[in-house]
Amino acid sequence: MSTIDRHIWFRVIKGYALVMAVLLSVFSLMAFVNELDSVGRGTYTLGDAFLNVLLTVPSRMIELAPATAVLGSIIGLGELAASHELIAMQALGTAPLRIGWSVTVTGILLMTVVIGVQEWVAPSTDQLAYTLRTQAISNPDGLHTKRGFWSRDGRQFIRVHQVLPGRVLSDVEIYEFDDHDRLRLVTWAARADPKDSHRWMLIDVAQRMIEGEGAVAKQGASLPWAGSLTPAQVDLLILPVDILSRSTLSQYIAFLKKTDQDVARLEIRLWQQMTMPLSTLMMVLVAIPFVLGPLRKATAGQRILHGSLIGATFHLGSHSIAYLGAIWHLNPALTVLSPLAVLGGVTMWVYRRIQ
Image (cartoon, rainbow, N blue to C red; front, side):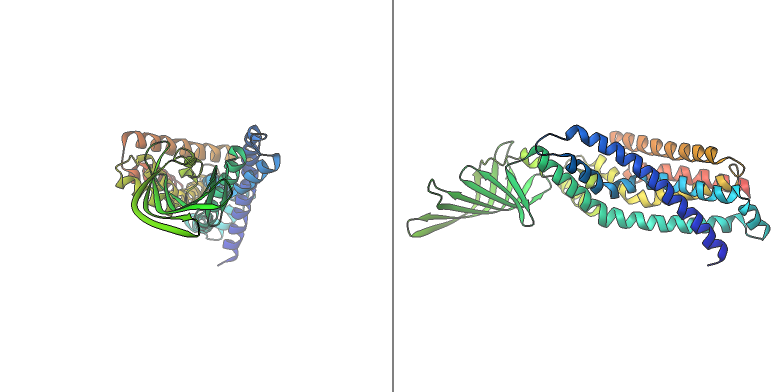
């Protein structure tokens, strides 16, 4: 690692930090203003809105990573160009490709951070934010714990360990009390499948009815059940696909495929998640030839304008193609990777022009 490498890294990473701080502040403020519309619903307070915005910062960072990459690289390299340091480096024998490689290393570092936040941080904080918001606004007659979800239906207390894809409840326990608050019936079921919008079918059932001083146990393969916890209400417990981790989304897609359901939109979403780090790196690569070539003598405002146009064009183009791909059921990999391939081709063309 040479002094020139360290100098380039410092300038570009400083550009990333500056752009991320500005974009994150603006978009977080917009999210907070949007959350104000929900304040007052149920038990949702101003503090809850602030906490929701704070918890969704990691996912917002991922969404802003490509824009941060292209603008940060352009600003960092632009400062070097404006102070004629790029000319001095090339006069000392440093080739444009060598400078480009130093910037690419910072892009790889940013890509690694995106992968880590995307896989291990953002899903957990997003799901916590969604659960807290849903509980505060809908105020359901239930309680989430580490061991599952509790709900009450008159004299019945229901515990659900987990909600599986397709609204299937896993590891269900139903405790029924009489009018004197004495436990009358306990029902266990391995799972509960939704029959319609109001009824369940308990599978692999074991019951114990308390009568006098004793208890009568019985088992069955299935048992109809109509409780207050309807399949429609379980929607509150099912997390949106946009905040699922890649592994959970893959499992969900596999489940839907087994039941012959349409997964085109979800497969494209999964590919978008998988290629987000690659998109971030491509944004770094596309910025390098523009600063070393056409934008070397441009002002800072012109560089930021060009960087914004590049990022916005790629964002709109890739999302439009993904939307059409979901409608026309195109191959999800080709649908998501084709804008990156076009961007790579443009980058190579500009590289060849500046050499």
